[in-house]
Amino acid sequence: MNERIVVGAALYDDGRLLAARRSAPPELAGGWELPGGKVEPGERCEDALVRELREELGVEAEVVERVPGEWPLAKGYVLRVWTARLRSGDPEPLQDHDELRWLAPDQVWSVEWLAADVPAVTAALAVA
Ligand code: DCM
Image 1 (cartoon, helix red, strand yellow):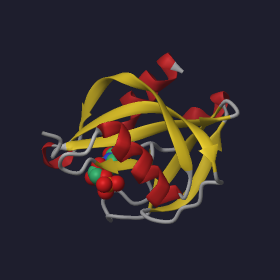
Image 2 (image 1 turned 180 degrees about the horizontal axis):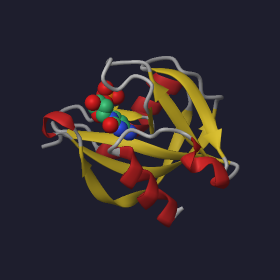
Image 3 (image 1 turned 60 degrees about the vertical axis):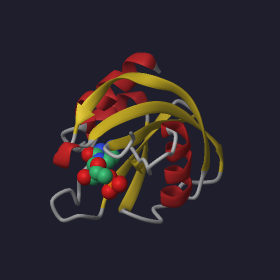
Image 4 (image 1 turned 90 degrees about the vertical axis):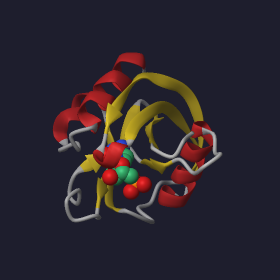
């Protein structure tokens, strides 16, 4: 069911959106994304998102709402996005990323988002 879904979080704290810069793989390194990752077989998307944010950033987050839409990634994967709220912890780039940035509304387009994340971020801003 969920084999080809990648979940991403539009994670907000204090009105700012978290962007994460990928350190791997080489073709994506340097690009900014909404943090998240692949849903495991049998796992609910929302649970995968909470797990990924814990693993990648060391934080506890609460999923708020689905951002309408679905965006194609490589290899038949699709990206789905939820807005989320930081519950505890201070995000750190523990895996996959080498820099994190909290973006105020007027800074959202100051980073070079990965291609799939451009429409996803646009859609996330429309619901937040
Ligand atoms: N991906 C993306 N944008 C995101 C999250 C992930 O383009 N916001 C892509 C990068 C990888 C794939 O999805 O090709 C799987 O992500 P991960 O390696 O984090 O599991």
